[in-house]
Amino acid sequence: GFCAAVGDLEATALACNLTQLCQLNLSDAWLGDMACLAAIATMTQLTELVLWDNWEYNRMTQRGLMMLTTLTRLQKLKFYQRGDVFLREFWEALHEQQQQQP
Image (cartoon, rainbow, N blue to C red):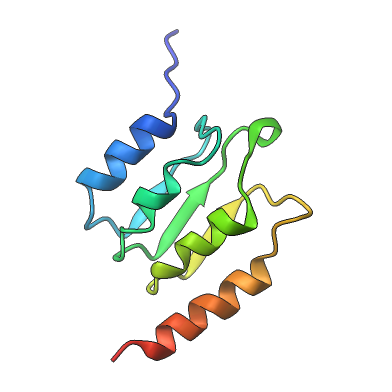
């Protein structure tokens, strides 16, 4: 059968065009260097984000993760966590962003 994976370019296009989504699931995507995170960070309606890409090629960095602190409605975030990426810092920063909103 035919199998097509979503890559960085496609994920970016989705994020730019589907801005009102509440849930985005990019399971089994080939996100490479996670360039799509800047576009995903503008999807302020998101409450759930899944980035289960190919774990061997996961390029999620702490900087990339912190870009997502603009998603102040986010309640669930799932991705393959490497040892140098710390979710606690993300949730603390996100909570600070939520407190600053009117």
